[in-house]
Length: 237
Image (tube, rainbow, N blue to C red; front, side, top):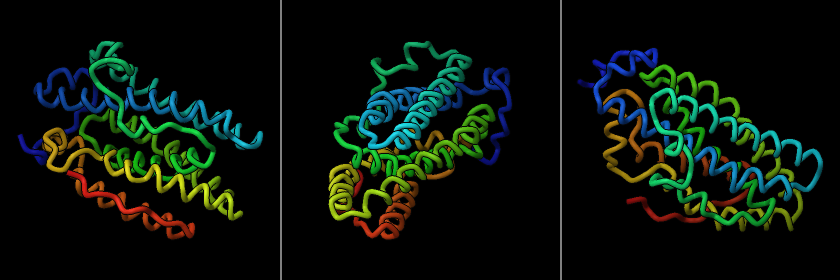
């Protein structure tokens, strides 16, 4: 069945009647989001609360952490409805979290950069699900998108605040230099078989290569606007 022939799958009951490859593809995506939303909240968002410099910053960081945990809860609930075992929707099993979460968060400047640039990458991922043929996942992406945009705006707001001083700008630029090189890997390998499967069934629209190129363009535009620079990154394999 080609993508153009794939009709909307509107309910869990409709999902159960789909070809096995379609169900496998949906479960892979839901599981990945559930695990990574939780892991990211645990290693970045919640620890950042103590790093936030003011009560206002702590308040908004608490909101970010709450929403990221909420994203996990939503994806986990969908995964359970699809028949995925609860243990497979949590970190610690055979499905490893993204390597970007291995970065050791040490400072407020680093967290600002993570929200500025990593959440931009997440926005691109969610964008690609907004017209997904599986409506429960599409609707979840549409509910999640405003919060992802808030997280990216949070990063821009607090980055902009920090770069007003020479010391703050230097700290932000160093965080970009350290963290940005690992972000293009967020989009997976070129010529990915999983991505081919997702596009075959109308679950995703773009190749990993196209999404990565779009991300690099948007990230460059963003840092140019802030008077910052991006380090060179190696081509993804």
